[in-house]
Each structure stands twice: as structure tokens, then as C-alpha cells.
Image: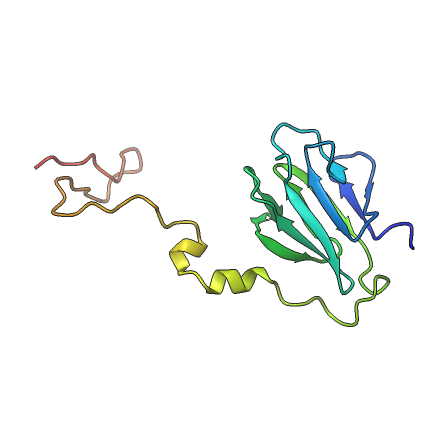
Length: 159
């Protein structure tokens, strides 16, 4: 068995965190493989898994999210040099895929299949779960050109 499968280097200083197993649970709980004692990190925040020489990150339904390269993810392949953030705590992922058995370039993102199964508003997080009102609306919004010191959107009209 090897000593390490790579490491997470904290941005802003601190000791690197070695990736000692092929599957690691990251979170606030002491039972996690990598324990991050921050109040904005969930008890079970993210799981890292090594597959075919590449690390994958999968968010475990955390409240404050897991981001790779500034984009919130459900699951994503991590390439060497990627910046992963658990809540607002950022780390650079350092490892060598070829030393870990990779036979080619990183596989296509698993997260894309999930996006393609949703409509664009859902994928962008813009679809509301609130029921839409039925019947005619009683409020109107008027958008007009105004001087820079006045708002362009006027308050609703009750007429």
C-alpha cells in the first residue's frame, strides 16, 4: 500500500491534508476521515473517491455546498490543481493521476448527465417550487428609461 494518494493544500496557509485512503468522508464530525471543525461545514459534507486514477468529489447534501472552481457541484471529477471548497474553506487538490493508475485523460463529468436530465431553469437553480398564481394579476411593473439617479423599475400599480 502507498503512503498517500495526494493531498489537499489549504489556501491561505496551513498544513496539507494527506489523502490516505481511496474513499474519504469529509465533514465536521470526529468520525469523518477528514474532520474540518468549522460551524459552516456540515457533519457529513463531501465524499472523495479515487476511481481509475482520478479523484471524484460528491456533495453529501451539505447546507453550504461543495464547490469546484467556484461552481457548486453534486459530483465532479477533480483534476490536479483544481480548487475545491467545503462551505467557504478552499483547498487545492494535488495528485498525479498517472501515478495512481490513470490510462488517459480525465473522464467526462458525471454531473453533466444530471444537468441534461433537467430543464434549463431547474439546472440553473431558477425554478421555484412555489405554485404560480392563477387568474389575472392585479399588479403591474413598469420598466422605463430614467436618469441614472432614479430607479428604472417603478413600484407595483394597484390599478
